Image (cartoon, rainbow, N blue to C red; front, side, top):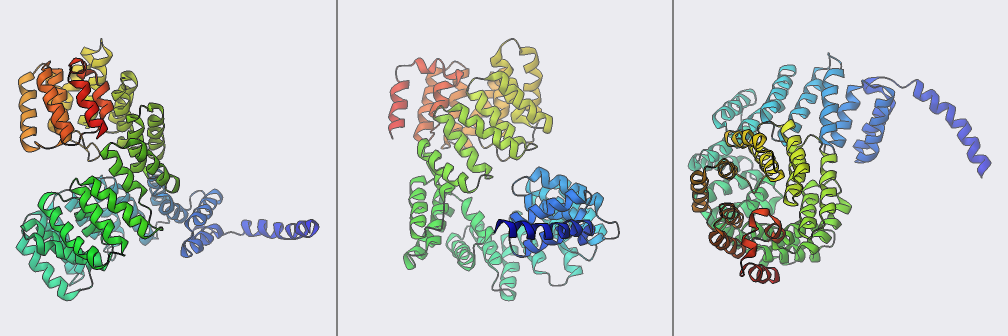
Length: 538
């Protein structure tokens, strides 16, 4: 058998070499075509291997660069962006359609990461290369919507309607802009007309539901949202479901509960109910329904959702188990990795937390959030010099990041002997207004209040804190921030009172309370330890 195998190899090898020598260029490259065939067969891993081989053979094959970028975008956005940038240069000048598509792809990648202005520039280049392709205009209109430039977005949608009369996507976009401007009746009228034209569109039902809910007609709006979810797993409906609280969330839960009662064996309704409960802060209920969903269908894995709830409930050990199970299947899921890192830190497993942070940085070396998260863990663990280096890494990537200026200045302050360097960083933090959605525990006002405090302006710091508490009097994080502020001001009684309120509202970061230096005097109070032990037992 071994001799036969060797014989076949000796016959096939020369043909393989001959085939490689005769491989064409660009679209005709043998490896590129093989990669495309695997894409058509939904085998993306094998396709990526062939596209990489095409580039080994032909370094400037723009087609292979584009296809490889598509394959790696989810795992390595930085590499995908680099490949697309190279593709724009290497694709044949006469192939305007593909060059236009490369710009669209690069623009979409930028938009995913919130860089909408740069994304628009790419979409404009794409539109200039291929005016027949309407995709760049759709993307421009959506990017303008994300930038809250609703009138400009409407103008682009109107241009789309001129080029393609009766364009349903343009009509949906105009309705979406109307909702954003709180012109609910106008949006509902547009969406009623669209439902008559395209009754099978879950997107339209989801948007009409959003308009009714935001208008205050909760029951009617919830029914439309549920109708959209029933039609398909609609992103618009589900995203809306995940962001509601209070009366809106309760109306959605009631509508979903009816579906659960009618079809208790269907796991999707348990999942939707869990998502609505979680967004409304009903974490125990959400956890129960996520687990019920998995028990109804063992092919549905919700370990990341379960881990997220467990983390918020303070069950860190169990959250680590579920996030690890999720990461074994989806190692590139950075949100799940950050959840695990946070839980590790609360369990005093700082090295494990920092290891997860380093993995986040490896996945996205140009993502400021990865460095910022590591800086926060280092700061909380009083490793101020290393924290300052990580905050500096964020600022090297984005010089408008107020939170990192504050973190850098606080790190220098705690290191001692760096007051002169810290002062300009505090001042810059106050002047910066650019913040990012991943920094959920720091709004611009919160940054300002700590900066003012360290600059000696106690009255301004207290004024900001009271404004924040008035707006978010039951927010656990806000109450914890107030406890920190008054601890820094030396008012231990007030700090202790806000700390108690934060714990009552569900604050579970016990390690932070026990280790942050500003709580040093508070921790000496006789009521401190019994209070924490009571809430840790719950």
